Image (cartoon, rainbow, N blue to C red; front, side, top):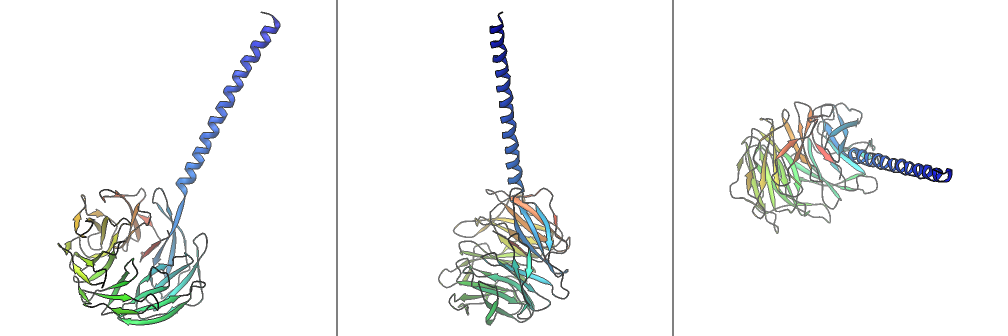
Length: 375
């Protein structure tokens, strides 16, 4: 072979080797980028808050978007003698309001971009035994049940500072416990646990005043506690802790009056404390404090009737006191008072069946009181 031909062959071979090397590098780079994106995606999270009544503080948690895993990030400094229980996050995500059941006050926290909390000024005095805090859909008013004062307090919210101004205190029957506002924003419902009743109001969105609904209060079951309303404002469900049942009601869209749904009340576990509905309004979940589990039901569209989900009830921690569906519609969280943790579940969007999240239950540092998820 001539020198010239040999040189050409060598160059051709070198080019082929170079091409293979370049291609390999590009493949590896693509894999690296892919892994990096996957890692970034899997580590993305949003925030959640849990009150810790025994510690006198509020915990900040990260909720992993893809796995549902909860990670404890920080806690506010403990304040003795407060017993923070109910909480509500405003729609702008700038302020977190926390009811201090032992101090008869509401603390206002500024929410930083990373979710950390900073106390804003002095706590606002409210009625005796603040229990449940809810912000109306317009974002203008904060409503609070005062368990020992037998009233509901309504405060207007300053959108710039979060400061609260009392609109009025309204008689709400004996031992008002939980409070829910229909997503339509026009009706308010309060559970009266000591007398097995539900007190109902219409809400004037112009001034925040409450007016009793005709026929109120409505009969529920013994020890009625937690309430839940579907996203369409069609149905209300109530956990009856002493009766071991859940009452189901249809909501009259014009008057707000409640009427029992066929089959109500429904039998659940022992001492049901709280109820929650998934964002699609297809499933109802009940936290049974006495039997340490969660009862699950499908909600029949149009009628609100309940049917037990196959496999229900599902095991939770010890003494579950709240159940909350994640707004994105993937996960469900149950706060366990005696085991001082939060159980996390994913749920089947077709059947409603619950499956424990890997790593669940998750520590929150103390017995949880209530939970709010940022969305």
